[in-house]
Image (cartoon, rainbow, N blue to C red; front, side, top):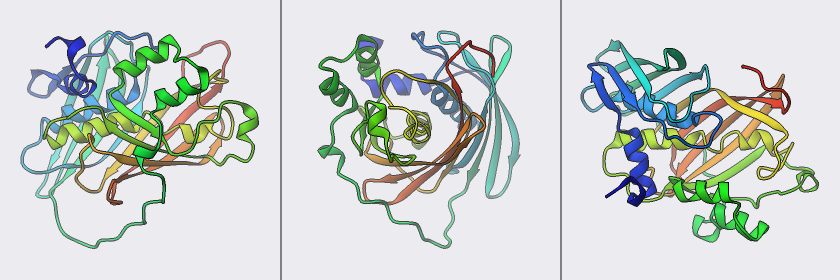
Length: 296
């Protein structure tokens, strides 16, 4: 089977399948796509794979904290250097530095926890339509425009996740009147990701960066169409609460409590189909009015 014949999920698994070049050094591929920078979720997912491959025993990741330091260049491999910070009785800690062409582009610290029992509670999942009752993102855009623009058609063919927005997309500024900084999407990988729990965790880490900053933009500009802002992820944090499969439907509820000083903060809660809260996410993004480009 060639790469072109692979399913989107198989291509994602292949992307997360790092090459081990030393005991604690890994190399990940970066697709040569027509993007200004490497997708941040890809770097975060690959870095978490590198961290996870240096741990032993049944200790799933429970949290990660990361900084996007420089934009990565598409088509150029990324090297992930892992530092074994701590191997304790209950917790394991790893620090990962992502390097591309001799420059550090990303830092990640991940903590792994031996499963234990303790107190149990969670907030209820919001009442939203089922994913089967919502259009696929590509179909919604196609219905509005009459045709899917070629760049989006290409992206849709290679997209690893089926994305369905809970609320209809807004297409012009008039539709933004009274819009709150909130967004919700159902997502799942397109095809099976296999049975390795680390792959599912890293695949969801990849997906967590796809739509989270939508919540910041919703009160200001339509999600699809002409952009008025250049935006980039600055940092990213996740807490993994329960086991899950990223190739089964999960609801990603997102909101932005504040945007100021050219930065917008977004937080997300991810629920599985049964209503269990499985992951919490926080991210800050940089939002600059489009104009002459400069380094962050």
